Image (cartoon, rainbow, N blue to C red; front, side, top):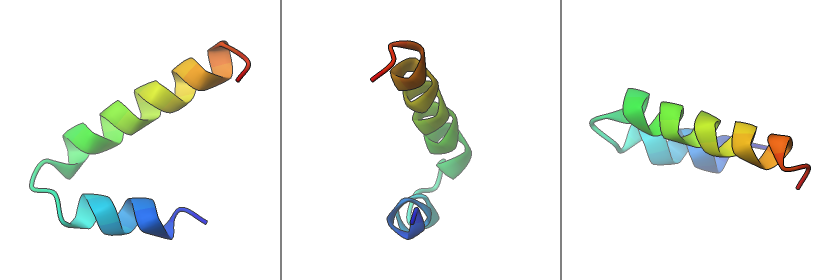
Length: 34
């Protein structure tokens, strides 16, 4: 399901930062009930 996401961060040097950004966006979407 999230294979594309893991592939994306695998190519990033700062994947920990990318993960935090993604989680922040995900939480925001859930908070807004989107």
